[in-house]
Structure formats: C-alpha cells, structure tokens
Length: 42
Image 1 (cartoon, one colour):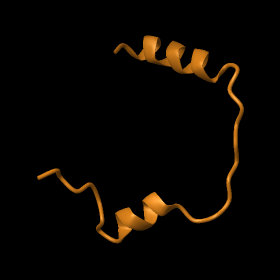
Image 2 (cartoon, rainbow, N blue to C red; image 1 turned 120 degrees about the horizontal axis):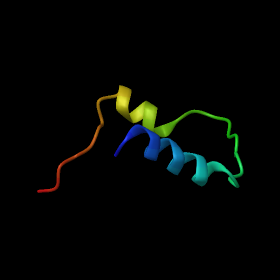
Image 3 (cartoon, helix red, strand yellow; image 1 turned 90 degrees about the vertical axis):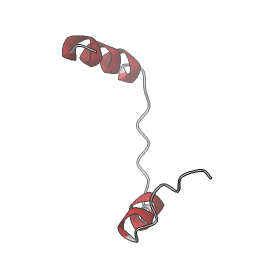
Image 4 (cartoon, helix red, strand yellow; image 1 turned 180 degrees about the vertical axis):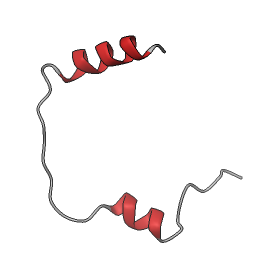
C-alpha cells in the first residue's frame, strides 16, 4: 500500500474516533517480556 494511501486511510478512520485513555499495566507487554509470545497451533 502506498504511503499516501495508508495515511489517508488512517486519517479517515481516526477523523470521528473517540480516544480512550486507560490506566494500568499491559497484559500483552507482560506476556511478551516473559517469553509467552504467540503459540503455534498444533
């Protein structure tokens, strides 16, 4: 995807978006730093 098209797409998506600010620790970051990344399906 060209950079200009990607920028326009993100701009349109975020134009009417509401920003939600959350507090607390990130569960994804904690799992990533603990080495519990994506587990492949068997």
